[in-house]
Image (cartoon, rainbow, N blue to C red; front, side):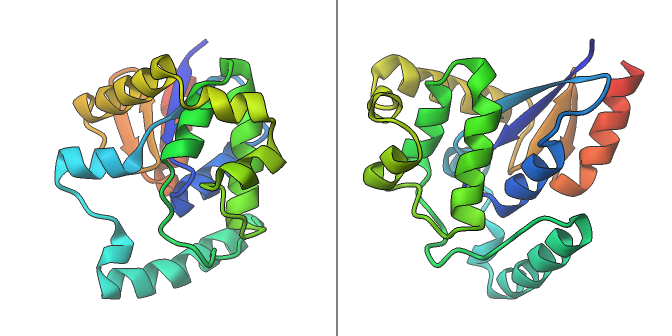
Length: 186
C-alpha cells in the first residue's frame, strides 16, 4: 500500500482543513500523520507565515472561512493566533503512532472550532491526560520532533500542510487531491 505522509502543525489553519478532509482516511492508501514544528520550518527556510503580511492576513481570513464552508468543515478563527505550538506538537510526537490521528483531530477541533488555548498545559491536560502532557517534555520526544522537522525541511517543506508521496512533495490543503491521486497510482 502506498503511503501519503501528512506533515502538519496544529497552529496551521490549512493543516486543520486538510486534517478534517483526511479524518476518515482515504480508501486504498495509508496516511502517515507526521507532526512537525512549523515555526522551525519557517526559520530554516526563511519563510514567514501569511498572517505576518497584512494583505495576506486579510485574504487568509476570508479564504479560510470560504474553504471551510466549501468542504462543510466547522471553523472559528481563534482569539489567540498565532499560537506557540511547541508543547502540543511535542505531545503528538510522544504518542504511539496509531493515536496521533485521533488526538490531532481532537486538538485541532479544540483550537479551530472551540477556541481552546491548546498551548496551555492545563488546557491540554483537560483534553488529554497528565501522562501524555508530561511525556511531551522528555528529551527523546523533543529530539524526535526536531528530527521530523529537519527531515521535512530537507525534503523541501517550507510550510504546512505538506504532503509527500515517496519523493514527490505537494504543498497546501488545496493540493490534497493531487497527493491522494499520486498515492493511488503508487
